[in-house]
Image (tube, rainbow, N blue to C red):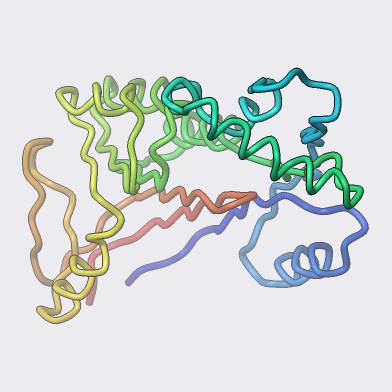
Length: 227
């Protein structure tokens, strides 16, 4: 019989926003939920092109990756600056970008779960390079670690020879559908080189970390064999 011991949600709060604060209040009212939160930061990015030289990428470079910027023709830079100038004429001189990630907090809790709980397997729904160090620590401790993402940082890709398993999130729907159709459950592998599906077996002591926009979700599930 499976048992969810605790669900911890990492989610940023927009202070003074009724929707954001109401969502946090709703989560706090639910049993088993623990909330890790911090204020969402609003970063102002200037788009004021009134004082830059002609053909200058000084403003555009804040929004375009350097590798792409080097490929753009001068005409493209001028066009983008012209679009920004039109926004400036309407009174828009900056854009606000919300930022609130919990990579440090999740990495911390992954290591705490490893040290203080009998966890065999860890699943991270993020391909961010910030998780490379804690994941390597878990792999060195002979833990099973899975990353599910639609993109993976080179630092994580380099950990595949150490046992890190990577799955494309776009294929997850097919995997779940196949599992549901056959009535099978994913079992912890007998070795780091193979994962198998067998009936009536669940993962025992499993930590699940989900990366949300502006927040992340951690689910700690301690499970036993199905009946």
